[in-house]
Image (tube, rainbow, N blue to C red):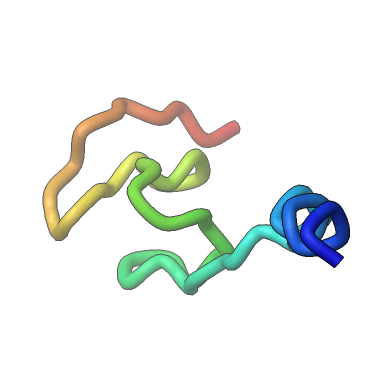
Length: 50
């Protein structure tokens, strides 16, 4: 049983995505949005939209 409990922590979990407050695209937490470049209500990346 101890081995099963240790191995249970190694299971795969789907990444939790949240909507970007600026463009509403799905973005992982603590990552700048790749589509608009915003992070925590300020623009940190310059993104060229073609």
